[in-house]
Image 1 (cartoon, rainbow, N blue to C red):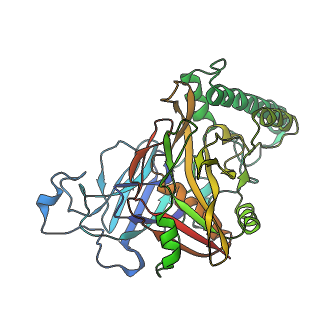
Image 2: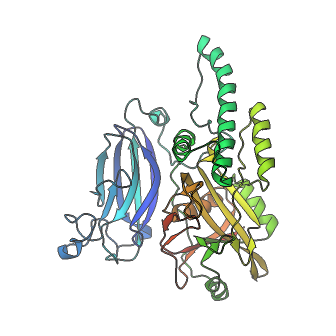
Image 3: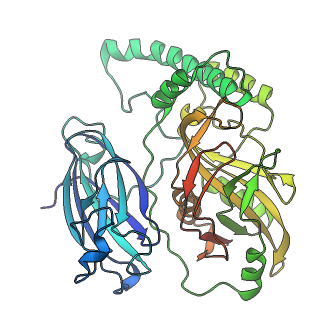
Length: 420
């Protein structure tokens, strides 16, 4: 009988050195991993290419075959061989990454379908979640997720009565701290939060992000006219000082109403535009015990104008420090009579120093392909998509920095999402 726990599925591209799974680990967690060529692809073998040991000399794991599937349990930890089958046990808290054992061009071009069965260690935060039947984990709904720092479930007796009063106090404190931290960082006031305090707030407010399910993508090539129009798109957005920043990493085809309805169905929230209004809203919703989910985002430019819409998705109260978000612009062309929307998505995971002015700003997950795929996955899971197609344009962005100086990397592909 298989151990109880949770099952996760990933599609790992060999074109990307490391892929962040979004899966947080705890001491004592056990991982049973199996991998094979995605979609029946036999050209790429997760056990690597035998007979070419010299090619692995400069690879992340010199003792493993070139092209083999490898993992690490922290961002800067030593890599571990996984291959087609692997078993890993954690001794301390960490985060799961998968990679390809290659330096430079990988031995093959393709992807691996990776399955992970996680059995939580006793007493870890994930143990309770794993006590029921196994399932594929999807991103939690913001309307049902527990606030950051607040345990799910219920208490009984005296503890429950005391907890209700403490909950109100904690919610008020969380939102007031969120507003102060955000104002200090985004407006550069420096009056309420130092970098150390912002980092602390990030650690407190941040929550574990669910793994993105593997996308079901179309195998047919894009229409030639749409490819040509995408080829002509700017590769990156810029700030008001013309500093190049986030990469364009997805396109949505559909009318404005269809796009807005689809994103609402996928639990995306339109970001507030007015700073003062947003802070007042946070304070008011504090006293109404609601979760503020629409923290503003800075203006960036594409096609010579600021974003038409900003969308975000987060755990309640954690939105100040950790959120999925993207900006989207209406393209100056249509395809098959439908509007086309061009987006740049990143995942905020904390705070860092803005290299332009030294103030505090959001830090993004450098593996930006994860956010691109998360956007597509949420729409697909909500049954809003007709097709999803990866497209590699000419001169793709694969290693760069955003406008505030934070680095990121990508396989360079754009995800083209055609709505129902």
